[in-house]
Length: 295
Image 1 (tube, rainbow, N blue to C red):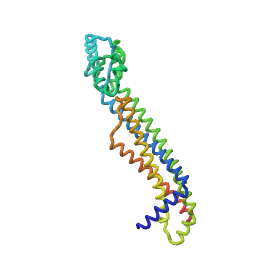
Image 2: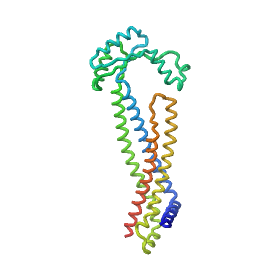
Image 3: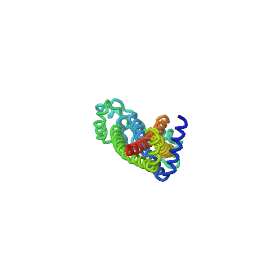
Image 4: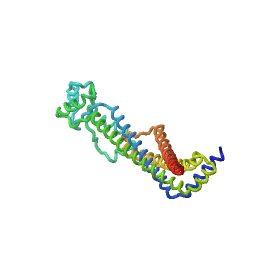
């Protein structure tokens, strides 16, 4: 058994040398395809993380002018609390908001040099009874006249969910096309090796070699092509994601970047396994067609 496996691996390496150019093309193609596949997975994960973070925040926020007095703010809070569907209203003055912002991001952003005055407005956070009431309450709040801007999570969440769905559909379509093209390249690459060894295969069949024995060197060659391509793609994705995530954390510290290492490791592992599966399938298809033509 060991001698047979050693023979299969040696033959696979010989095939690598015989068709070095096409093998390189196949590896590069698998690397590109799987990198795009992994990038789409990471993008969808981060978009979903943003949607989840937004969903966990307060339903609706109304902003007023910065020059509003606290007495006026108290009167507005009472008016907002009386609106139908509103369960609770919390007021945050611009001073409190600026203090909290500096506590959260002052260590990552040099606020003293870039901002000389408090740029934040007063804010009212409203909890609404049901999500369906958000658009209605938002319109009533905006119609009060003293409110300069109204934002509510439902609108942004719907837009983000639409974006996630569009990215998912477009990404899956592109991945299917790239996978099919990659599989064809792997099949043709190994097919060239099969054709170059057509005489050897014929002799092996004459002396009693089974189809399974003949297939294994080519299947192992496909696995090696896929494994190298998947490993290269995994390395590119890991280094790129860590670099981009670190830069975004510095530039946009309030942006929720996905950092669950277990899930990220599973994605990298899926990329390597996907490349291996593509290579194995390509080797199986190419040599099976050749053996079928032989018979």
